Length: 419
Image (cartoon, rainbow, N blue to C red; front, top):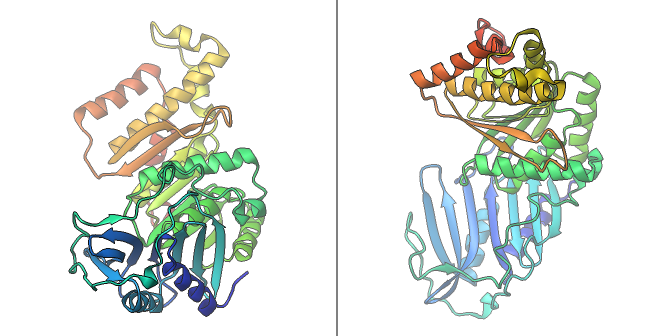
């Protein structure tokens, strides 16, 4: 439930100045405001002169680093940051993780969880340590004699989950254990796709969102990283839109997560997104999601295809080229080959439209047989003659017409669906 913002920020302040602080990030902005910096990161460091609180702020042009003494100097620096109208705070200590998001109404939505890495070495009580007030100049780095206070063994292990399995949103959407594993795997792919220093604003669209477990997970994860994000979920069913909108209200994120009813190709999404997600859109719905992402010139695309009936039907209708008839003679082999050929052609077409594409496994096949992920990043690079020849050779040899190619060939109109 929303809480008083002043009380929430007082809790953040106490954690920022606590000896057990591991790391904190402030980012995003409150409605109708603009902080003096787009992002701030705080962490304790050990210098030759003694322990300091390192504060790295980014004004959008370059980072600025300061190392302030614990005591009145750190208190003042923290108070100044808390006075900025950041939309999100993420604080990790030796024992807990606290996320604070400021709602549209100026209230605080809090989420607490145990520390992701138990066993952080307790820090000395900084309030009793004398400091010399030394700081690094604007734009300077901490230097060779600066290092984060070292954790004990185990602190730098990879987190088992990118999103807390006990996060209330999982219960709200009724996600099963299998769905939670898919969410975690998808978020790992998302983390590997986006720049590590991304702060936003980031516009995300989840096409064919269904019950929106991916939509909410993406929002939860990105805001936890300190990214200012706006998320839109698209589904053809109006009842899903109403249900998901109510969930967003329940979870306190309706000002950042909204839902629209409509088809993947025609739903109104404005402005165009930076990141397009499509998880298990059935058959040619994946092609529609990819086509729309390219029309939008989205910077990143993550699509996990589902069934592949369209090309399988074309393979049944046409004779296989010599000597590949055994690949499609048996129904089960033809279906599996259709999966491979469909996604290979999708990757080739995306490459022809200025995207760098990776085809990876995003979750173990024990959890879902539909475990392939197309991960694309827009580069704007023109296709080479070899790229064109590879694609043309595949479609000519197998006598198929990919749905994605048909969608690309449609003339662009004035609607949002074809921008």
